[in-house]
Image 1 (tube, rainbow, N blue to C red):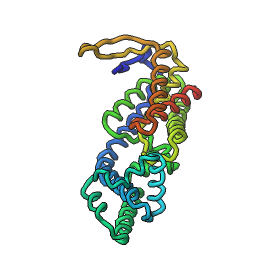
Image 2 (cartoon, one colour):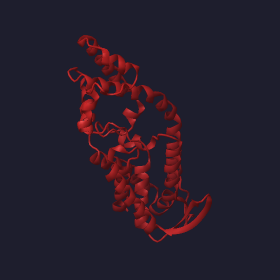
Image 3 (tube, one colour):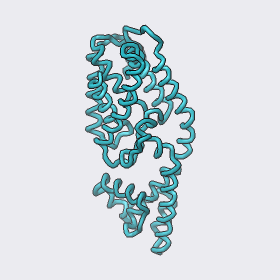
Image 4 (spheres, one colour):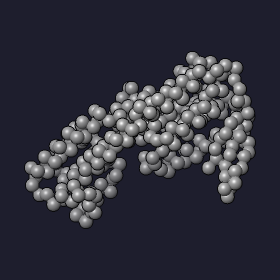
Length: 286
């Protein structure tokens, strides 16, 4: 793994107040939401799994409008694999699934569907990820802002903030605080929209500052292409440091993100297309 340490110009003409503020807001948002998101996730995942299993096994049942949209979206994404949910040879996922596969009373099955739909609809209203993360299938205006300040874990947060610091404070120093602030917020929204174009109909919430940070990296490439970045890596447990120019490192990273996005699509837990969209926006904006 290559780790950027610092670039040649580590001093600016003014304090990076906005960059410090962005770092602080990301940390504060994480501390206020992380444990709640973790507590909500098990029930959220279980309800969605049971909803899909019941709909796949009994397509005659009638879900609520919101649940039906979710089911139809997943059905379209799975294609022929969706039919495997109704196979009698399918392995049971849990005890609830085993009970439902033995259930033959249509009224009882519809009651189970109704109960799952109520839970699904309630979670849609209370889940932090569904309300403040960016969901391409039903994007909310506020999520174009809030999704950029939510993170899935400590490593996710630390990685994004490290790159935000490296690229952000020097751009703030060169552009000024107003332009830099507006650019950052627009970049975050643009990266999310680009992801939605590439993954239409997805119900997976997208969170993290990486799209906006990718835009800073794209802008950094345009503004400081010849600046060298000190990198660190490990070879057989021995640390190795070297310097490489921005015009080599950043295009290589963007190209890798493009190939990962094309190859993995929605199957990846990383929003590669948001990175690509942010990077392109950053280059054009700069």
